[in-house]
Every structure is written in structure tokens, then in C-alpha cells.
Length: 145
Image (spheres, rainbow, N blue to C red):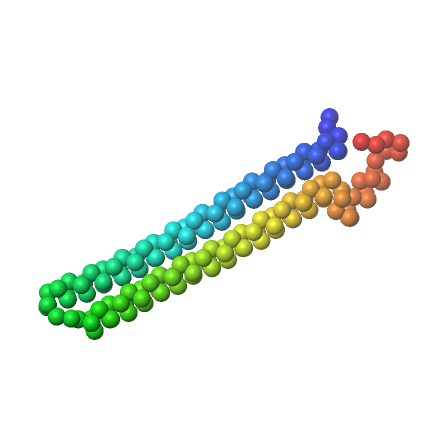
């Protein structure tokens, strides 16, 4: 027959295991989200670079075809490329900020789960600060588990 302490240890171990599993799941989700945001930021940057390169190439082709200087068009293409690069940088920054927010939220959730597990362990061991006085009074005198 298992003693009260053995049962409490079992419940504490079980609560700890569940908390560890939940923590692992939350961290995994946070890492997946961060990785996805990072990939999207890189894709946006690459797309911006491709757009800028394409604009530059079109400007060069136009200059060659007409045989005259197209400084105005080149400036416009340069400005467009600059705006595309700026947009890609902004998108990357937004992705970085979103990732930070997601990781912070996941961290807070992990803390909450851990605190709940700690409270469950304390409660199962009778360390929660209330509600266990009746059990101590009901035990036979002179016998301790």
C-alpha cells in the first residue's frame, strides 16, 4: 500500500512531467514561428533585391535601344530601386519585431505553466498554506507516514 508521501511524490512527478512537456511544446511553437518570420523577412528582402535588379536592367536596356542618354529614366529606376530596398528593409524589421513579440508571449505562457505546476506540486505535498489541517488531525496519534 502506497503511503501518502509516495502518492504525493507520484503526483508531484506527474505534474512536473506535464509542465515540462507543455514547456517543450510552447518553446517549439515559438521557435517555429520565429523561423517562419525570419524566412518571410529574407524572402521579402530577396524579392526587393530582384525588383531593384530588374528595374536597373530595364533601364540599361532602354538606354541601349534608344542610343541616347536616359538619365531621367535611370534616376527614376534608381529611385524605384531605393524605395524597393527600403520597403524590403521595413518588412524585415517588422518581421523581426513580430518575432520578438511572439517569443515574449511564448515565454510568458511558459512561466505561467511552470507557476501552475509549482502550485500543483506544493498543493499535492501540502505546502500550499491551507486546506490540509483536517488530514493531519485525522491521522492516528503516534504514527507518521
